[in-house]
Length: 182
Image (tube, rainbow, N blue to C red):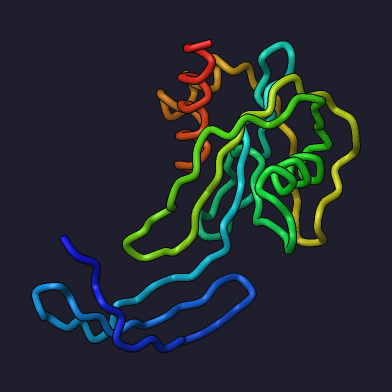
């Protein structure tokens, strides 16, 4: 198997949120794809944040594209000159006010959708979290903090009792697996 060859690349638009690029590609068999669209987005981090009594710290917020409120784990993009670990600790503190004296445990680094997107999500587990601060939200953020028992969260995901997104569900199951092997 061989990689495709990018012959040309043109930006259709660029925004602070992300870019759309059109590539002309030559496949190993010689076929040419005139317009292969690639969405360029920033990498982001997320974390399952657990308290000592095994409550998962969730954020509830309105998601316009989904036209509803969703329960999610804290997440966000990396800022300039910030490591993934620094980024998730900042995001958790800003969105929830929770902090921990333990080092975040990196569970994985995954491409979101490599067929059309170039970005990754880096998932962490943060244990022994405590409420240390008030939220420090951006002007366009409206986030409610929800604590849920870790086991009940799994049941709610499995039975479609809560609205959440794929990255929260997958992170939950990664943590469940990680904790069961300890």
